[in-house]
Image (cartoon, rainbow, N blue to C red):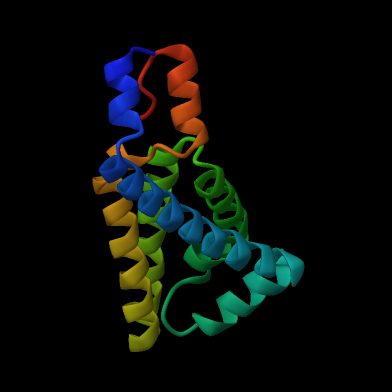
Amino acid sequence: MNLEHKERLFSSELNHRALAYALLRITLGVVFFFYGFNKLQGGPGNFATGLQERFAEQLPGLLVAPFAWVLPFIEVTVGLLLIVGLFTPGALLVSGVLMIALVFGAVMEPSPPTVANNLLFAVIVFLLLFLLEYNRYSLDRWKEMRSGRKVGF
């Protein structure tokens, strides 16, 4: 690593932005992880049955059941990846698509407070993708520095 690269990497402005990025990424990861973990802890079958009953009037069970069964696993996986900063672009892309599905369900229910809450998460996902260059405190960055190749899109 040359001196100019070290100066840019450890400059005060970049450090603050990279630290802010890491805190937001980790926070979002914690939210996803524990939402999924709580669903798994209650039993994925119980969660799936409850979601099917909740949306029985709005959406066909053939759509709701598979989504309900995979949702907790996706949330836990995406959450862990965001917490450690591994495969961050892909984890953010999956979380963005997941937010579209969750907003769709909340609109169909209808549940305006849930829609608003999910839109806030969608904005956070957008910001993290938009500011991906600040993903310095992550396993992605560590892999990048070791291999010399850029990780991500």
